[in-house]
Length: 316
Image 1 (cartoon, rainbow, N blue to C red):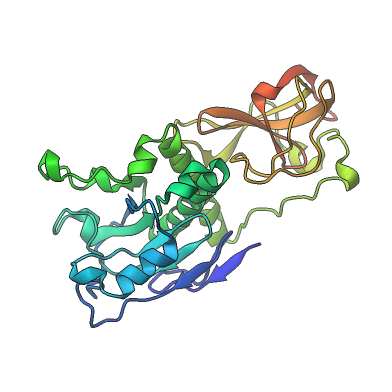
Image 2 (cartoon, rainbow, N blue to C red; image 1 turned 90 degrees about the vertical axis):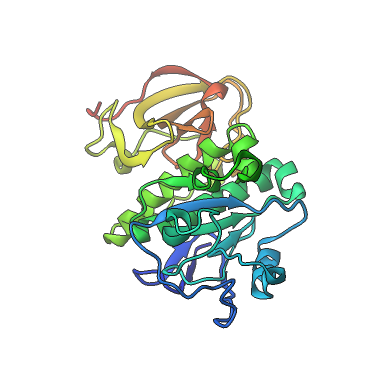
């Protein structure tokens, strides 16, 4: 379900996201936590991890709103597996990158990713937490014309090793987490850039009644697309693009149909072992490869084997 929110200080009007965004702006008199200084350009994307094993985005917002224990500290936003809180307008400075008057503080748009132990111990909650943070920062990046995702670690390199922040800790050290984040960040930045140009993504088509087996690729995919073509603007962290393959494959085992590659939503019954069906695109998500079907559901590449080309009515 989409959510549309006006983000203070963000150009381009209300922002539509797949999660709720709540605003809890720091009182202006708390200048240690909301400096009130306009950010410089070009803007930077600064991803943090909050380092708290028992926390929520709401808790991070309340902590800052209530004065951060008297510390000079601030961040634009905080995100967990449920949504985002915004505490400082997007066009203002936050004290969070430990680089003094450097680009992390004066140009950065910052987000605290919640590192709650229960979220990170649960694969589905962890995947959703990463995706929400990446979608949020990617869409913000499109609005602020930010070039790439960066870590807090990237900005405090002049600090002595004993004081350099290993942050965002979980994204940096959980296998595949940062690569997944970067891939999603670029995907959502590209999606938001298209929306800004008046070209929002097409709605996801519903699966056939009863979740029948996928059929021949329809005109939505086949028009002006040939085998080997790539999807412009959708690029993963290692430069791999979505590649149009238009193949018939066979399930090696009972294969779940996924609404998204992170596996946070399974849709319909699995495709039975030995069943043949059409796949349209192949792409990489984290360290795994997936097929995208004509119904825009995803299946793991390793769960299938290729049988033949798909009939495309003269295409490919």
